[in-house]
Length: 153
Image (tube, rainbow, N blue to C red):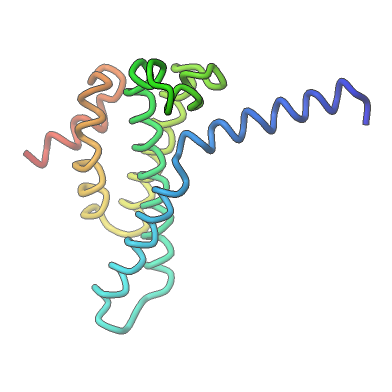
């Protein structure tokens, strides 16, 4: 490989890693495992494997989107704190606009996936749970999800 190509591949890998960091994979993983365990408990011993997998995948997408949205909302505070200034947005590895768009795509994908593959109920619960982040980011960025969250009031 040529040096320029190697540098471009490293830069792209670093960018992908930064977007992955926005999803806070450890937290999203714990929430996903909890959703799987909940699906098992709700099944009363006769777990529909595909339903559980779809629940976990939709939950992961929605959770990852909500966590990325939270990093967008907290970007200014994160930039001032030593512990958090290395996060993708304050460090400049991801622009605020790209992070906001990425979070919306993940969150809306998760809500749609839960609605169509599982049921509207978990999608509504997920939408309700991200309401605080949506409100902090401003409704103009997220009118569809904000309407979903307000329906539960």
